Image 1 (cartoon, protein in one colour):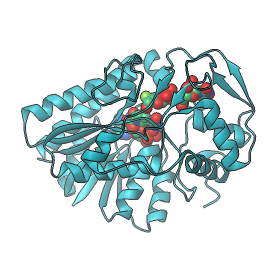
Image 2 (cartoon, rainbow, N blue to C red; image 1 turned 90 degrees about the vertical axis):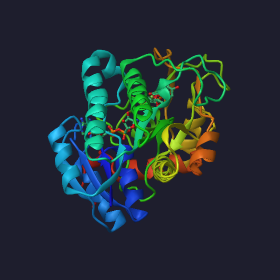
Image 3 (cartoon, helix red, strand yellow; image 1 turned 30 degrees about the vertical axis):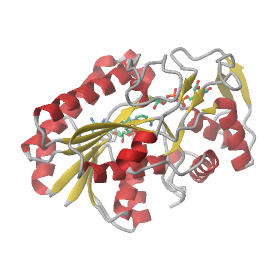
Image 4 (cartoon, rainbow, N blue to C red; image 1 turned 180 degrees about the vertical axis):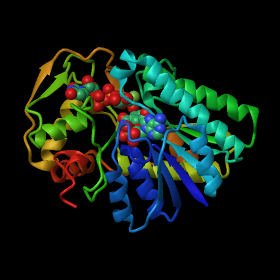
Length: 341
Ligand code: NAD
Ligand code: UFG
């Protein structure tokens, strides 16, 4: 009995594969390497001291999926495969709808064909309306403002219709807040292509000397210090949330939608200070204009995850910074420099 993981070599997929192996699951994993490298899964196997089954392939390729399902005894699927860059989704929306939405449909069709109807799907806090101000609950207003976010909401709705059409389906859509950090070993972590869009990898690359200075996007938001507030969640906590969802689906029916966040907001300046404190590095920064499309504040009400999944985040900001830095400092070029191992 195996768990199939799509997009397994990526940032969250690799950490989840490791936790699945550590918990004793057999894992069948695939990725098309559009945004990752095999090295991440080689390191996962070293860390777990166990192997997984890996195939290179595309989630939109039904024949590839059928071959996987016919050869392995797959009982549930965790679906990470997809594109995730907001700016790119605005420039090339069809690529995003094709990869994210068509891929998610192809996967569900083949699962149905093989009567595998337990699915955990990566959604995002980006599906929520920017006007939600207090802690965001799962029933808060939804209104994504870019093709990436809309692709996630479309998939949620497609899966909702699917679960309503056939009561055998058990689906968890998990809305992640801001995943950061890395496994405590420093062997696996986030390896963005090019200049990072996201705050934590940007800070880490300034700290390691790959980038000279951080631009802080706006200091006039209605927040504690004027900079944007987010709910940063350690990627290992997030990975464990998937194991909790798999378990919870055994006794749930239909589709459940759950926020995965810590419930705590942290501003950009607070994160810079926490990183400096955790690592002893100084992060040079300057304040620039707001980044278009950014919200002032976005953090989760994580209480449903606790009551439905029995899960809560346990790592604090200090650990997130220490672990992000351990990964970055041991792997200054990400997986591009594999000579350390
Ligand atoms: P990632 O890019 O590191 O991982 C995604 C993986 O999917 C990559 O390895 C990529 O090569 C693979 N992939 C993409 N298209 C594929 C396809 N058609 N077939 C097979 N493999 C394919 O991203 P991540 O941060 O690990 O995110 C995983 C999931 O979580 C994504 O669906 C993303 O949208 C979602 N998510 C991420 C964040 C975040 O901030 N990291 C936040 C919310 C939601
Ligand atoms: N920020 C900076 N400078 C940077 C990068 C970011 O000041 O160089 C600020 C942003 O303005 C924001 C905060 O840091 O206030 C966090 O920004 P990120 O880009 O790290 O994260 P976002 O909340 O904007 O978006 C991320 C993902 C989305 C996802 C969302 C919720 O990029 O895909 O979290 O999960 F939808």
